[in-house]
Image (cartoon, rainbow, N blue to C red; front, side):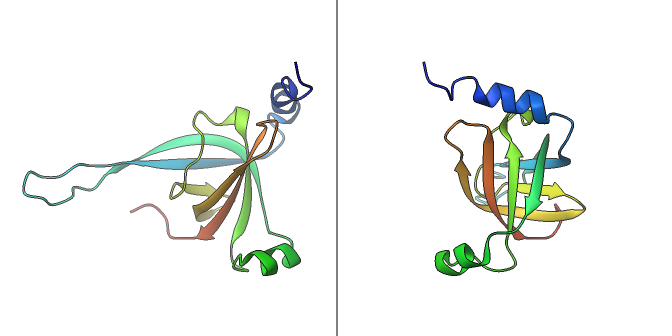
Length: 121
């Protein structure tokens, strides 16, 4: 048994209701129309709690992270699904698309590198 086993539950309970509300959108492919043309998919919303911030300028510079990218941290226990690349996020009135994802060792947070994007089509 590790000290990290119960940490995700404890962090989720402590921070629930304290963070910013956001929505993670996952696209479900629409398939094709039988003639090889792609049909538009649908976007399923999943509410979460999290934070929007920025990357440390030294880390961003050394890692090649664009200055316009945001660091969005999602409380894992607050979201029904795990984020994936190309999912969209709406938080604090802005829209973002996920380009990279990390998970902390205890599984408490999804740390997403996100590029600014337009709203859903």
